[in-house]
Amino acid sequence: MKNKKTLSSWLTTGYLLIIRSEENFAEKSTIRFNYARLLLLAFVVVSVFFAICFYLATTILAKWYDPRHQQMETNRKLVSLSLKVDSMLVEMDNKDLYIDNLKLVLSGDTSMLETESDLRASEQQERVLSASEINSERLAPIDSIFRQRFESADSEILPVSSSIGSDLQDIYLFQPISGIISDKFNPKNNHYGTDVVAKKDEPVKCVADGTVILADWTQNDGYVIGIQHRSNLISVYKHNSELLKNVGSFVSAGEIISIIGNTGELTTGPHLHFELWHNGMPVDPEEFVAF
Image 1 (cartoon, helix red, strand yellow):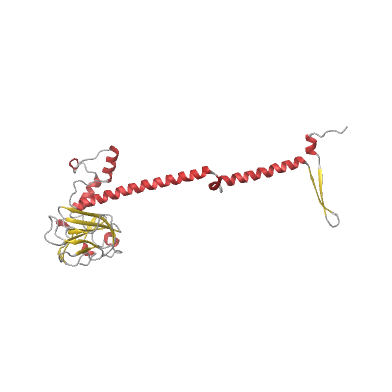
Image 2 (image 1 turned 135 degrees about the vertical axis):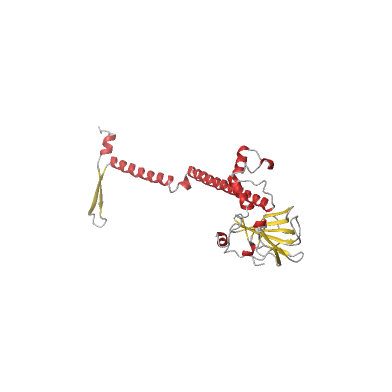
């Protein structure tokens, strides 16, 4: 009777693989093996293969095969975009506040100037202070400094040799209008620009490329247009009879933006009152423009 082989004997039974030459049947090499060694070798090969695949799937190939990696990458981009949008909104609010304050100063009304701290406080407390509630004792220190820059005669002028002159050396300013200077820049008398008398209905030109940030009527200065240029430079044109550009319009150097006039209560006749502001400080237009 033939004995049945057990699993142990089946795994441990040795085999010999002989490799011979096809020409003369000479023995080239022999390989001894059994099923246990073959199974162990197959297990090791499969384990290494799956380990390599798992490593690639979680690292290099994750963005193609792992949906969780794609979701994490999307979330990371969303967080980054959210932070950028938040920073841009804060920067826009600060710029809007600066432009609004500058408009009030140019129109001669400084009673409603706001500061960044005032804006944040009003948002947190969800209340707005009326103009009658704002007085000099309650203004923040930064607001007092802002007011002093525009109201103090001694601190308003910086010499051309200072940082203002160096910052504006690369900017060439066109002549806004051709005429005769009737009143020069004199901040001690609260005259922050240069008055130029010209022919009736003479067109007023933009001194440099920029964006219109102010185009409005004021009681004191009539039709006023203000343009933001690079290097924190702002040009202002007052007492116009007509404005030809709107807020937000981009204008090029030498482009006609208004018509000379005699509007407003603080005018002494048809002329252009031209101002230059750099970093919130008035500068003498004659130092940069050849009238």
